[in-house]
Image (cartoon, rainbow, N blue to C red; front, side, top):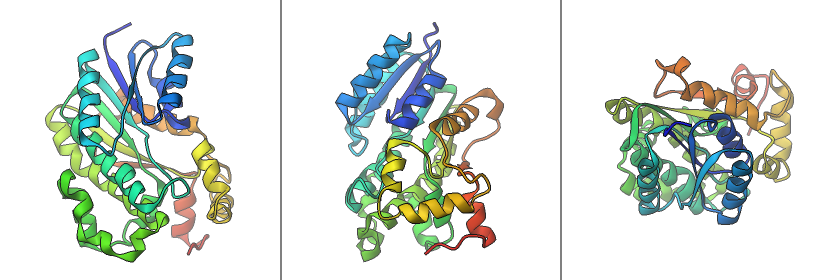
Length: 277
């Protein structure tokens, strides 16, 4: 056992799988808003031999994320950070999605960029929704999403657009912001000798993904899967594999980029094989 620390924020389907993949031989610092689910996952991992610290966190609150980063740094050198926490359009209204999926990621990039160890790496889970939104937003909005100081993000005038009062568009803009802010944050992380990237999953068979499949957009999501090159749902293991690559030594020259892991859905849309509204 080394004193190296792996931080996983959000311990749902993807988060737990990533923790199991990255955790052996290291101290795991797990964090989630749901204390019951957090403790259940932590106990399961401890029972399987992992060394685990569990912390309740509200990623939409700066002080909560800063406290988490300080606690993780006190546990040892932070060599890996995986941020998976987020809300889907079926789970929350637009304002909450913006606070968690947009502001929350910005808080994590700021706080952990200040404490990650030299040689460390981080990954933010974005979404193929962000990839599909690329080029659909005005250039001034994309620039603001990438570069606006975190404390001012929710004060941008763009949020007065009625379109962003709907959870679907709010989710898309938040996930596009994740990709853009990771790109911008790679410079600050690089100054500490660390790397930061994002992964954009497609339709993944997790509890959150199944909620979406059972919701209003489920029919369109199934059509996306059928039109894709792989014609299957993704698994949390597919995402953990991508995250492991981006956190590991084989990607030492990769930072500030997004890895699309969607089974070919976006390719189907861009090739014209699939038309979406």
